[in-house]
Length: 127
Ligand code: 5GP
Image 1 (cartoon, rainbow, N blue to C red):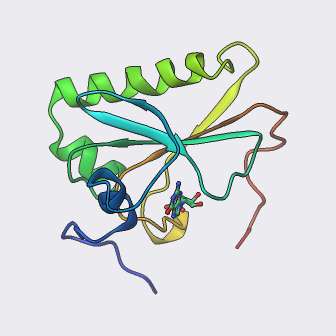
Image 2 (tube, rainbow, N blue to C red):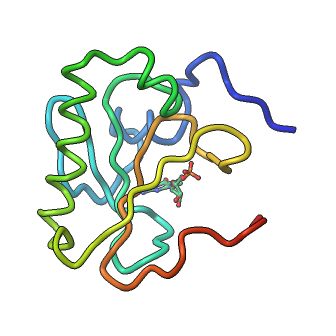
């Protein structure tokens, strides 16, 4: 079974995006966060919001980020939803943490999904 990482991997794909080593389709950026379109969208609008700091997952971000970073980050999620015009039609925010969640990229991120009806939250026992 995959284990939760204890050390931040500076070579993860989102770290490379933050260092501009690989491109992204940027939606928003400020001092603490970057938002860009997911490369494999699961809905009409599928944006990833990531902090600029080195945090592995939601646990890590919650435990180690400053109150200012946390406050700014979640306000950014809301700001991005408004910017792309889904704050009244509705959207879903998801953050996967650890093996059971199927987190693939070990840099904390929030998915913003919307732009069409999203259906039920989870497929039970989905792989
Ligand atoms: P996770 O499963 O870790 O919560 O989600 C990782 C997300 O990152 C997936 O939705 C995947 O499509 C997206 N992703 C992986 N590699 C890249 C990339 O190089 N660029 C972008 N824009 N998204 C990526």
